[in-house]
Length: 637
Ligand code: PEP
Ligand code: MN
Image (cartoon, rainbow, N blue to C red; front, side, top):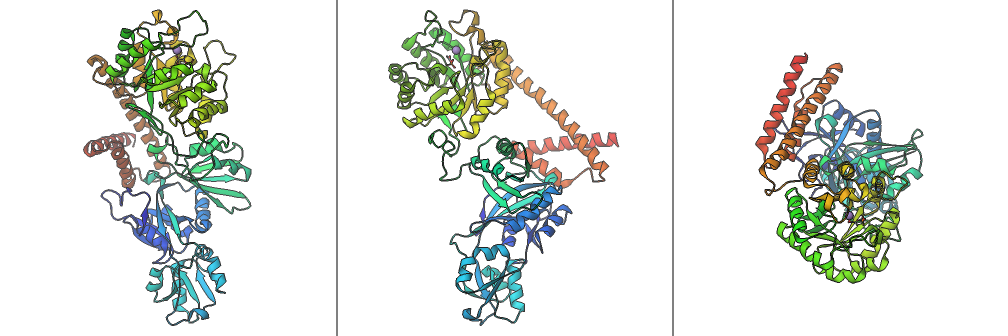
């Protein structure tokens, strides 16, 4: 049985003939099993180099190469030629993975007694998988190019030599199986990668190739939770080289020291680019002393009703700095809910620099906040400043906020950790990323796993902004923790005119969410009026971040929303036409055909994936785009 790791791959291009899939070896080889796994027609080649050449020259549509075996690890025999081909400029993408269970048999010509067998032929990778078993029987290993090829050699020979191959290959060449399962490990299996030319397919599996001459450079790759590292022996020119499976190139680039490491990516699934890779089981936390906050585990998703944050889900928490009256918070809640906010914020206990400034309406305001949340269907987020506030607030609020000033109030952290509510943990204005994670550890160690980190600006020498939004710190925290990380552009800016820019910057940098202060009468706000967005500005921001409005928004404003989308769409179409023209020019220069049916099939797949359930719309859009590109080409011609 073949395990299909990427089960939903399309078996063949829409409308075209059967996919021709190249593998290395004779019929009956494990490569043939992988090549046939997705409905393709297998074609055997004598070497991995020949498979890759055939792919380059169009003799096959797809190549399958073994990458990794459960017993011996990286299959350097295949990975080295692949690295060479990539270095030589072959533009490939990885479109799938197939795991083939490997059961190696020792087979000889019928009638050969096991004790007479002195030599066993096979592919070096297969021989390495049964080093100990063969040695214990005093059988010498003889290298040839393929497991099935070994069976063929033995069948044509008149000696008592045996082959290490699959039962299938043994039977195919008329050999008798003397021993089943001669590999050194019970659960043996080989992972094959399916490769296609980059201009004919979209990458679906992140696979990157690293060139580096320094061993220490690869040490930090340990942080790549979940990635499979496939080291190669390398050559004199690049003493250490490595394939990395399961980590996108952007993360590799970020982790690898700049000097001396070159990352060559065979692509990554576009739709999954922002997602974290799953962690490797049973490995140490990233920071040993912070086992909860930096555990290597899949991204934590915090979910309370419509508020969903982490692992690609993004949140928008909005509302006033302070809950000032039942009417004020109700009005603002309606405004932000209509714009697609997923939670309502509002302070009831306010940490103020000046003791005579408004301190919050306390537990009365909690009732007003909760009522507004109920009315609009939004969960509510509010700050607790003292241990004795935790219980009464946790009884009614959905998320407990720890303010920047309290990030290292350890008793408070422990108390919210026991309260049974998710915690939004602001970073202190003078706290390092490590200290911030340490604070999260307090909450988690006290029992609460649902912690959301929030960067809200740190104190620097700069006085033109209230704080400095530390997007770099936010990004630096990303590979260290599975917890969602959001940004607060309002407290970072301290000025309404900068909020949208900072919000967009944090969003573009991959923040899992934003918390934004909104007030419908900032001039009369009881706190932080200078940095509050009025509802109309908040609406523009929400539109820019592609939030979904709801039917409560007045019709004219909903139209403005859809107008903005149309504007973006039209601009994207224009951009697409321009780039398509550049591609056409480039193809003409190099004498390649401008129109390519396989390329067209790949474009159709992209639209179908983005428009699930709207096949006709997807097809018609592609038709229009291709028609436009053609019209443009003939004008040029
Ligand atoms: C707030 O969210 O209103 C607040 C006081 O934030 P911070 O603790 O980040 O200053
Ligand atoms: Mn505030």
